[in-house]
Image (cartoon, rainbow, N blue to C red):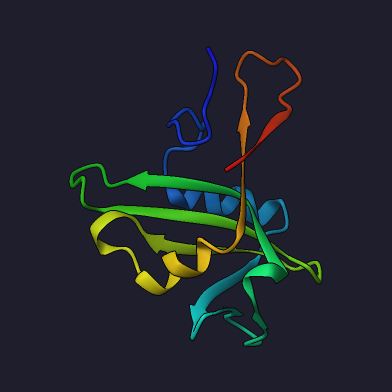
Length: 125
């Protein structure tokens, strides 16, 4: 079966599991969007959209409320930092984050469950 970047076949079911996996993979920074730039939560270093890319993203829906949706981006910066950015998804999405992320290169890596090597397939969006 062919997988699309936005399908729900990613083998992660909750945000905590995904964030823990990403932290193990080195995505330990947390980012936020402030005044049109992405900023590190700890040191406040700012990045323009061209200074980073989203190497993966994950969408989640609340188990009891379909309006409880969020999206988690795995971010790599041009200077080598790796971290995450979280936003609501749908009607509660942060307009500033959405506007910023439309300018960022976004890639989705989908693991093909039929591939015995477990290698991710890269799909640009």
